Structures are given as structure tokens and as C-alpha cells.
Image (cartoon, helix red, strand yellow):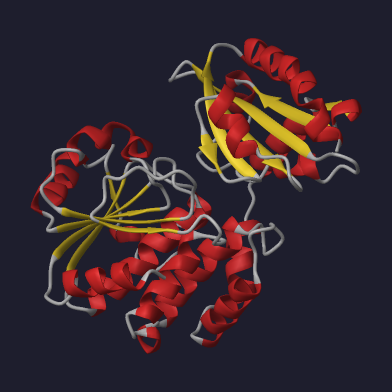
Length: 338
């Protein structure tokens, strides 16, 4: 942790504040886990704290302590606006550009509050007065742990904080298998277990709580898979009709993209999901080794993320999107075949 940034945060938190914590739109396990872990910590310091989410998040994350207190911008907009306008400080977690908050972004740009960015994605923008940016770290939840420790409050990590942060780490590391998982990540996870996080229970709540509809939807995605051995690439698709046929709810497609990388010899994979309401295709990209999907997503699909995990979007049909994707593979053949 940058000592100057830690000192600035210590000064900010030296007296109780009204604080809003914001994860990115369509929050995942790390976004919600880090937000709620920080929420419980800041409450201990005597602050008036609210978590304001740009929209809803998956049911399999709603077991986290404090989840029932999260305000949904889309459902209780007036309450969210009031919280943000009254905030002395705004903590933005797991994203580094205000555009990642969707419709909330325009209001955020006008707020007089002090902004604190805590994030592990590349190429941050400079909207925050206090900025913790560590692209080499496994997750924002791991960063929250290190920040609490740097502030001298590691002993203040309760079971609730530990459970939220552990959930964020386990989801963003793919259960500790992704390349950003380090020795430090394992040490942090072990300490969180010592602090009360039940690793087996958390894993069950996140990964072993499927509906039949979700598994049927996964089966459909796998049946739609295309494989390109010459490019060591695969992709899956899901249309809006297929989502409807299997009673899709938010979070049902979480993790589907990773199945493509489980195929022997595949180094690059994607899933293309049609969002009929927004008139676009949402894209998740994953890779192994040196192929940089962050650069790929930024260059071709208005997205970004990490070296081995990124997302993007394209206005158009699934057919138009996959046709473009396939046409790009030849351009990257050397990198994919190396």
C-alpha cells in the first residue's frame, strides 16, 4: 500500500463521516464482498455508512452480512440520490472509471464529496482524491484487507468482515486458480478463515446453490460452443430467447465463460450474451498465459479488465458479433499459437 495514500485515508477517517460505498454496475462477488467488508469496518469507526449499488446483483451473493442494507439505485432511486448528495466521502470499489456505474455516473461527477478509489483494474482515470490502484492484486477484497491492516486495524476484522472479503477473493480468483493469486493472497485467505470466515460454507453458498434452470441454461451454452483448434480458441453464445426459455435471473451466467478454458489446448475463450433490453451483446473474455484479453477487449469491444479476464459489449446481433470475433482471430494467430 502507498504510505502517502494510507496517511491521506487515515486523515479522512480521523473523524466520523457520512460515507457512501459504490460497487460497479452488475456487481460480482468481489464488488459486493469488498463493499460489504468495507461497510462493516467503517461502521466500527463510527461512520454513517451506506452501500449504494447501481443495480441488483445475483441471489447467490445475498447471504453476505449486510446485504439486506444495500440500496439499489434502480429500485430506490430517490433514497440513493439523497445518500450520495449528503455524503462527505464516496468510496468506489472494484472499478476505476465512473462510467462503470451506469446512470449513476452523471450525479457522481457533480458531487463535492471526497472520492476514494480502491481497485485492481488497469488504466485508472483520475477522479479520486485518494487512489489505491493495484492491478497486480488478486481482487479488490484482498486490497481492502491490506488497507485495514495498513491503518493498524487488522484486529478489528470481525467474522462478518472476514466472510465478505473471503467471498470476494474466492470468486475473483476462480477459487484460487487464476494467475493473479499469489502467496500473499493465500496468507490473507488463511487469516480471514482465522477471523471467522467459513471457507467450506462460503464455497457452498456461492457455487453449490444452483437452480435446475441455471444448469439447463449452461447445457444450452455448451451446446452452442464453437471451437477453433488452429487459434486455440473457443466461444459460446446465448440468445435472449434462450435466456427466457430457462427463466434467466441475474447471475445465472456467472462463470459460464470459464468452461471454454477447461478444454485441452484452448488458451482463449469468450461468451456472447444477448441483452435484448439494451440492444447489445455482452461479452466476457478469458485467457491463459500471455494472451492479453484486456487489450483485446479495449481495442475491439469497448471494454477492458485484466490481462486474463475482461469484458466488453457490442451493439448488434449475436451473428454480427461472432462474425467480427472470428474475423479477428487470424490477426492474433501468432500470439494465440505461441
